[in-house]
Amino acid sequence: MAFVHDMPDEEYRLIIGTDSQVNGDTCFVSAIVIHRVGRGARYYYSREHETIGTGLRQRIFYEASKSLDLASQVAHKLAENGHADVNIEIHLDVGVNGKTKELIRDIVGMITGTGFAARIKPDSYGASKVADKHTR
Image (tube, rainbow, N blue to C red; front, side, top):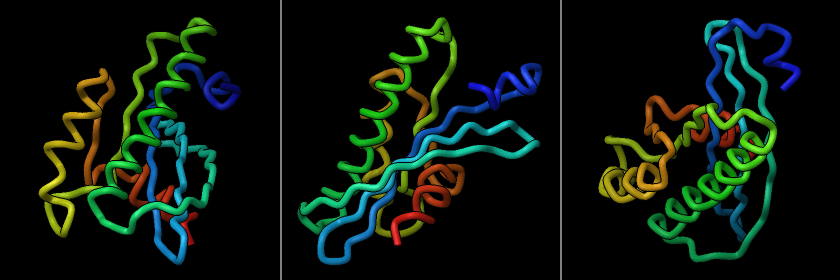
């Protein structure tokens, strides 16, 4: 929160995204991004290696579930500290082009059904750029 307290009058977006890459086991990276709109960002990430099926649908749903779980934990901590009004966006590694287009409706519905905002490519940089950078 120090990043926000440095410039409290700026506009911020709190973003959570997960991406994965299969290379034997599957590397999942989840990122929390605090974006100071027009003035940069700070992010934190965690990396986990898991053995799950290599099917695209299974991986994309698992990525979304990991982001949803992390967003719920962050929202709970924010509420405990008097910041329940902070909106969290979940960035999904799906888009209208490519193999994931058939999954958009189901994945976005899963996220928005829990009260979080969902973003897809090309607007889902928390997953498709930040988390993706650390999957290799």
